[in-house]
Image (cartoon, rainbow, N blue to C red; front, top):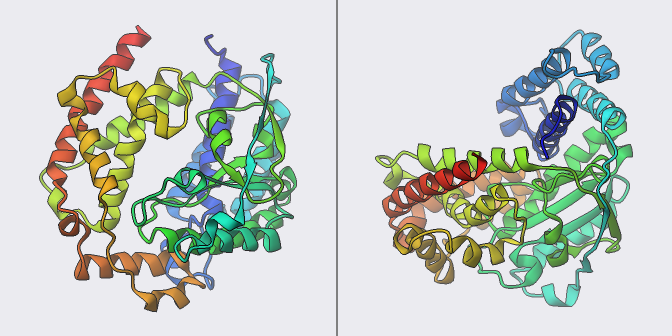
Length: 399
């Protein structure tokens, strides 16, 4: 079903808000804040630019299709110092969520109920998995005021992880009250950033923070954010509540996310690929393993990543799919580089900077590429061809 202009505007607002909020509460610091946190907590220029653009969109003819953005626009215009400070940024973000809540339409689709299992601590007693218990304890002690729940998902939830390869996938669901109150939002930002130390202890090359949902999204739910099928394979750190969702059409968002992956693979520099550092290489490898799910989402199929490979594979020739099989074989036989214990104390203060330093030391002492004999050019060229083929299939379906 094709969205009308009003619906398209509110959908775009939700999509952009969620992305901006996700970056902000996971850190989103300025260059000086990235280095000098917790003494400096300013917001990155790119994130400020994105929020400014979103406010401009709400004022434009394209964005303002009979929608009322008066609260956020008044808040934005009354700020004398702009939104580069974390305090002002949080105030405008909070106001925009209020306007989103006021303008969104209730969906006519049937409500969907989903319940996850509760994380069993007995399954996470090994030294490698202790950070999962660490995050659980941190969340119970510090985050219940701000969050509806925290979920572990992916291979650490289903326990088919590969040490050193698997990242620590989490989902945090933020209460309305924690966004409505900009001071609470700032406090939550500090807490979630500090909690990233647990993610990095599992995967020192982790390239993302916590995945974010909000209570605002439940009755206007976009599965591009987090397909509801994933809840069946995730583990709750709090109470394993049953969630009620009203699903909205998310075709445009599925295509947008798929297009991001296609552009990433097409624009990866083949000539400089062999000089890729450990952090960027890990990102590339995980992007390859996500691509089948992104392709299927663009076709309107939402599913757990593990099941996407065999289904997506049917649409491609053996030669095209060879690169995905190659990366899957790397996963099965992965050798982890050495970690440096000296960064652990500093990670208590500034986890991202500490683990970025750790990745630099990894490159010097035990290069991931050499350790696993990775043919990066094969991956880059293979994914460029696969992405091109997938793109043509999706566009043909749109016509």
